Length: 319
Ligand code: NAP
Ligand code: G4F
Image (cartoon, rainbow, N blue to C red; front, side):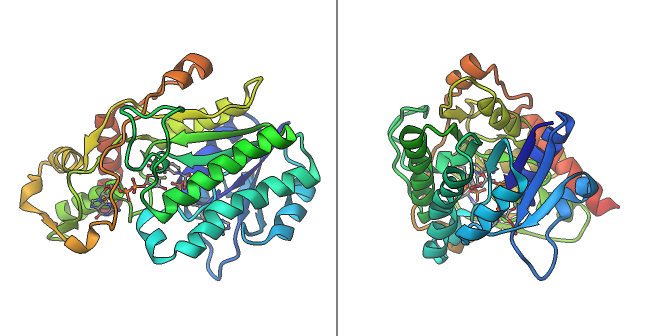
């Protein structure tokens, strides 16, 4: 049985990856940071099939001890401060979790067992002010937020440990991926949650920032499969994972409201406080390498994703 350690198992991607690897017959271990209240909502349904351990990306010794105890064959490093606006409010903490935390994981692997395969959750936020359209593995990075800058560090330290120590380390450059398990502060889930609340008479208005921003949105369940595929290759490499389509926040609104039989202009207002100090205007990925080398393709369209998220939020409020 293959043993896996997932950091960030309580998050959106960690929970889908745990589902996916349990189905593949893995012995799944998850790392969580200590909290006074449990944050296990997304993994409640598999709680008795996985093993949870406390450790923290900020604490080097806790990572070394954890890897010695679990003896994993694969590690997926998904834990991070992942919300872009917070990275302007807490830039130092973001760097400590999202950037230096990756070095701490890699150092723990180097010290305990260099044969462990490592996946790093890199991000299309690294492309920021895009230098090429569409963005691919070779497109230069130009991050536009402290989060993006931290992810560039995490990306290159992963490349560096692969080249310096011959560790099987892959960096997946994932474009935005969403689901009914997405945190409610991210724009897609903020919209679908509001659509459901408005439809059920619990909310009147939805305030958003930049409606013109464009993102390449896919379904998180499809993207965790790509993470696993990267670690099953002969050679460790980096891959862009994206749909190859882009849509604006405005289009997401139109589609989500209309799925619930509502006209978005009747409910959406603008709040300039939600506009970012520096915006990433356009993201669209080129997943050709992942198609050709991994055989990976997204299995859900943009329309299916929006409908799925609205339907799940509607069901929740109706219940
Ligand atoms: P998420 O839902 O925000 O989950 C983040 C996870 O990290 C949570 O489990 C959180 O634990 C954990 N965490 C944060 N700080 C930690 C610390 N100091 N020690 C231990 N655990 C910590 O994020 P996601 O959407 O699943 O994304 C997963 C990863 O992919 C992140 O690294 C993100 O930056 C990256 N990424 C995401 C996307 C996307 O579109 N979703 C795209 C590209 C890259 P708590 O439950 O305790 O908060
Ligand atoms: O949903 P968002 O907050 O996601 P963002 O900033 O693209 O970051 C997500 O994707 C990255 C991959 O590219 C990940 F690395 C990262 O961890 C995270 O998962 O915002 C999307 C767009 C932005 O352009 C933002 O300005 O939506 C725009 N937006 C407009 N109004 C809003 C809002 N975003 C949020 N969160 N809230 C608003 O009211």
